[in-house]
Length: 499
Image 1 (spheres, rainbow, N blue to C red):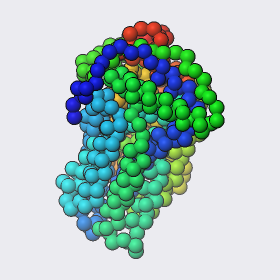
Image 2: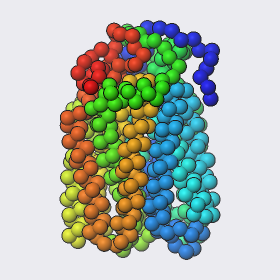
Image 3: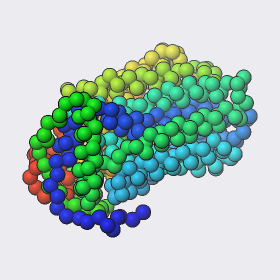
Image 4: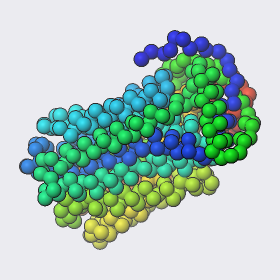
């Protein structure tokens, strides 16, 4: 790909951001949610399936000579490493070439890699395509989150972003229940059932691809990159469609913004923006991602093994327990998401992180003391992750809205990659070793590490979180291309630098 040489750049004044933010909720917004948000269901399906089939894959008749630790440790770490690499690679392309091109390409990468995982015949093949599956999913995080936040009105941005990111757990529910069926050797042979679980991911991905073709490019990206006429036409068409649906005339947008258009932004300017212009926000992003990444990538990858090793749950039944936990995870963003737009970002982000961390400490103590069984352990995890899932989803919301438009996808990719690499690669490797030992105290130690990181991230949010609720993206962080005046002129923790 190369930048469009036919695009002419100049200085334009536009009301596109204000026009998008004052739109009422409509069928058009539902199309955005379904077309872009459903990929998180695929991610949840992927991670959960691997966690729940780990014990079956390690059995001699699985058709794949791989150990339990290799599935929950090495393969899990490679999946996360692929996601980090994909986020950085596709994040840069997303800011440079647009959201739409990349969220179609990244989904295609995911589909191809997942299909090839299903036909794994050796350990190295399985490892390779777990990495490439993560590569596609990582690119999705950058392209999708940036597009969602730029298309959803500011009044609804927080709850919609949280629920979409939380829909990961709907996929987890499906993956858990699917694994129960797939691992039932009365239905499928031991070397076939686990392959069918990956094949289903391909089928769901193809359906999503059909819907996603109708999702438009972000008008905010368009007017900055020399396509202002296309942005105006797109928004005008959406306004006409919504006025017809609602039977009312939309109010006139209040403010305009003046932009000096550009084709791309270099890595040096991105780094300067993130770390020199907004250092407190950079610390916040790192903290939130490291906390949630260690908790989720370390714990959920090995949950099936915990049930089998410490509670003697048959490997074919772990999916039932995880389905309950996953549903509790989805309820967190669903029920708490609205409060991020009403009570505000700072109290909700800090509160969900700190509370989930404290509850995880309690769970670790109960587990270490031998006071839990498979059922009560599941109940404890439901309570912990009800709050943790809302907090984890808010990490993606935070880094996608607190940095300038031109760096949005790359900012998401950068914080996701660094935070997830710290917690998501080291976490599964460490946790696989701890659970493999079969010693309760070792597994409880991993829980305590995750709890401590969540609490620390919550404390950082108390001081550094940005009050972004119900504000235009341009007010939260002034675009680098803005020439002054208009939107994005607030001070302090709003649009101005926090250095």
